[in-house]
Length: 126
Image (tube, one colour):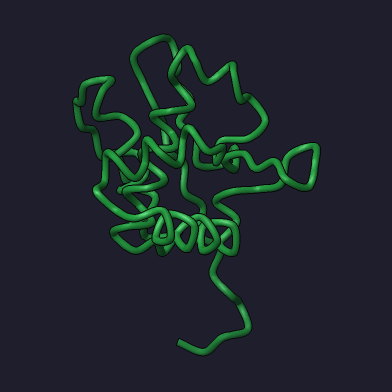
């Protein structure tokens, strides 16, 4: 088994986690930045105000401010994240949440583990 370890701060967790996963996710730099902000917002105590809609207007305004991009760009990036299944539909048609697969799970307040299984196609010639 291949094993890599890196010590990070809790503040860096979402960005480092998504960057590590991005080989599979295939996000652009801007999509990665927006997803990181959305993960950061999800961890905030006031997220409870919009628990079923991570892309609500107040959160979009925070994205615009943090990343210095226009509302139109945020809307386009959110549409692309929906198409890539980073954002998945909530209970209602107008609600979207982060896909659970991209949310880091902290084990024992200290460790986040990423397990990656790659299954090789047996019928393919090498």
